[in-house]
Image (tube, rainbow over all chains, first blue to last red):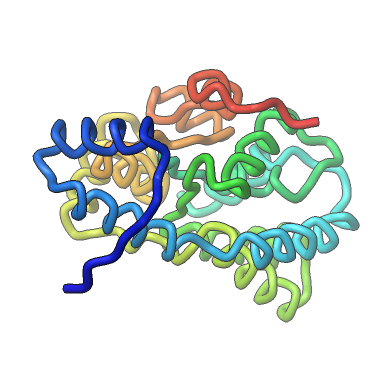
Length: 78
Length: 146
């Protein structure tokens, strides 16, 4: 297990400690869980590019209400 | 961070505009997910539903459908695999609310994970198993989309 030194705003440290206490976790365990979650999060620039590409594909899809289209498709499986 | 299970009836509104209702609310959710303020997840069924919709209803080409599904995974992360115990819950919900097993899987997953299902699908909303985008935006006090 590596030990590291990090600098955090004092108020944030208080919040971390409070949440860790409520969840019966150590401060390190809470921070590790938060870091894992952040690492697993999609890369923001990849997400931006994917959204732009998606909007471009749907631009010529025509006029429709997604909820109606989805419902029709779901009902066809009944 | 709040995690939401986002139905494809809302996900399509993230990218498509013409004729859509609740567009600003759906896009507010998208932007919150993009910023990392919320986590938007889908179940594996979403890929099949989206693929079918694009292929059969919108008549997209195969490569475009495949590309769109790839992008959906980039945006929402790997879809959640529906666990065996959730299938049991889906069967109960489907029977209780007169839903198809497919529809019930969405609601059962949200229940099992203790998260909200956000949907624009009238059948899920009428069953009280999902909240509309507007309700989610208000509940989470998300910034309006402009």
